[in-house]
Image 1 (spheres, rainbow, N blue to C red):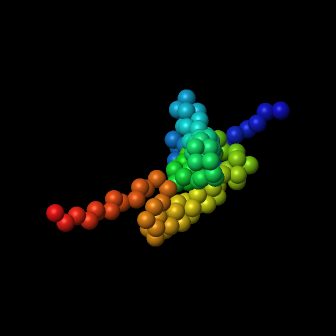
Image 2 (image 1 turned 180 degrees about the vertical axis):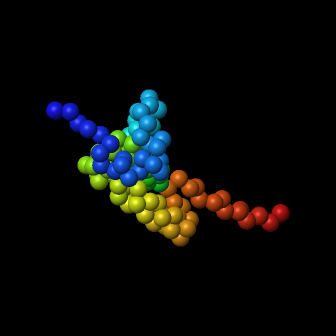
Image 3 (image 1 turned 90 degrees about the vertical axis):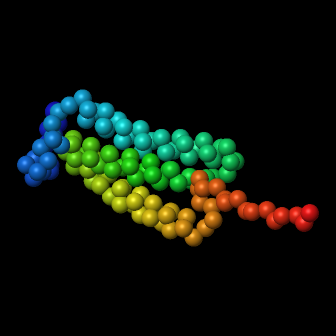
Length: 127
């Protein structure tokens, strides 16, 4: 049994984005890059949590989630496989929303994730 690719959405997109359906070594590199970005977020989050000895979800976790899912979505369009497309199509929206919420939270607090608190000026002692 062989799997035929390019039968799901390619007929509608081929004329608009023909480069999406070209076969190339670079598509494999692109797909691996998305998977590495998306997967690395778990390892980095685990290392930060171990260092802090508590559960920590650093801001870059959401950035890696968003950009990794965007790359995976583009790659899913390239391989044109319905189950994979449906599996990743909503992830950039979810992680993008988390980035919006993160930005709002950072704007309301002094410290947010990787930001360091501002230095407070010292009072001068009388001479």
